[in-house]
Length: 222
Image 1: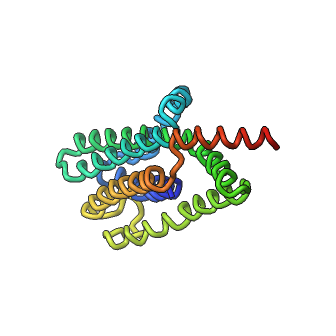
Image 2: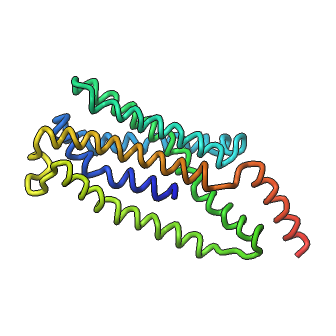
Image 3: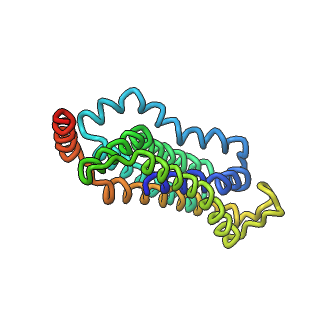
């Protein structure tokens, strides 16, 4: 669920984001650079993620990260209502950085969390399903990457987007609508990530320690 939320928000916002920068901010060349800013915090977190996880736990650190991402999404909802475009761009960038910081935590530990889910299956049911877990994760990521942009294109059409006009030929109202759409997609992405990590994934640090200890004891006997 968290992975789907991440890809639905990030991948689906790409087209609307391009139109927003080209028509609303009149800075088409900045679109790709700004997208990179959203991923930069993930790289910055890599040297510190092990210390954070050891101290707080994978789930706990990821939950805090998703909350930061939600805050970033809420900040983004402010910028479309700001009349001054330069100020609006600054607010958007602040929201994007916050979103990226939160997403960076989850992204760095997501594969380790899946490994823990495999161990959890063995702990609870006595079987290991590595192939099933990784294939399901891969399937839903691809589903989000494929279906997400298609759904967003339908929404964009409802908001006035005309594909024949290209990226820079959209009306001012459509460009403004793209701002709301981009902000909404990022917020939706963050909320879905929070639901997946905080409310569905149930391996907190205490449970994980208990599980690992019991599995180690079981394997030692075997």
